[in-house]
Amino acid sequence: MRALVTGGLGFVGSYVACSLNQEGYEVHVLDNLFVSSLQRAQDLPGGINVHVDDIRDEGAMIELIKQIQPDIVVHLAALHYIPYCNVNPLECYDVNVRGTTVLLETITKYCDVKRFFLASSAAVYQPSDTPHREEDPAWPNDVYGFSKRAAEYYCSNWSSRTGTPVVIGRYFNVFGYGETSPHIIPVLVQQVLTNGQQIKVGNISSRRDYIHATDIARITCELINLAIDGVLLVNIGTGRSYSVDEIIESLGDLSHQKLEILQDPKRMRKSDRPNLSADLSRLQSLGITPPRISLTEGLGELLARGVGPYLSPKLEKYLGDK
Image 1 (cartoon, rainbow, N blue to C red):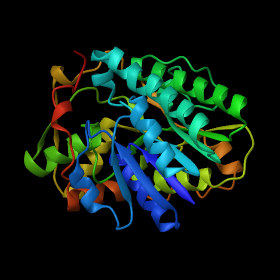
Image 2: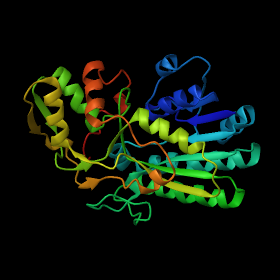
Image 3: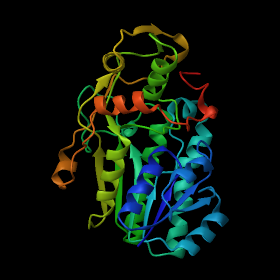
Image 4: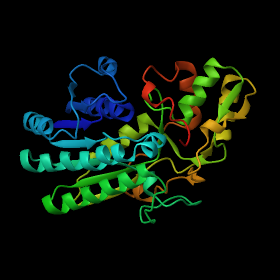
């Protein structure tokens, strides 16, 4: 069985590629190196095939799909750092919507994929104080969320036209070693490791559901291996949310020091939703093993190991609203 992982040199993509490799798939990863690098390819297990191309390049996609003839595709390639997407909306739509369209239509013409997985996002949901169910209104409050909702619609339509089973996994906030984007957890951990006790942050009361990259990769692989018909839409999170100040408190406890919070206006987001957490009823009904790695355990790993060498310098200036 051959697997293609788009965005496979990115943060989550590299974890998914390793999981599929461990399951015995012949794994091919595709990446345009926008926020990743070939350095990461050297850290992947032997036998994983690396292709440097862009999903928006129709000619390159035709050649790649004809060459690989994948049995499954896990589509992770996207622009997903929300502050960057808000400043570059046309690029966001071009990658996340048109790129997805190019990939799917190329698959339709040149190979027989057995299952397709779209990594979508909890950002598609209308802001709410309660845990999100898959049936909740999908009315995003940012450009990235709208682009992912559009990709969901296209994948659903494509499944109806081709008869190919599609799993749409709505990822909640993924964290762990090796992030490429300056999300809140790697930024906080870096400050604890380098700046000492004073921690600069933006919004501190907003709550998020944080799931470790190891768990998200395992669950993604379990879902792609399910025998389904049509489209399966499912939340992938932990079912519990934490505020930024709770994360800082945990980092202080783990590092045995009292951390001082300094709110930085440059890091504030006006559009930041108050709460984002997953209702996992559907995931549990599928018999999927729930997440195993707690937030505290994951934070401890990062303090001991560091956040990794992959944070992209292209995104450093996009910490808040611009």
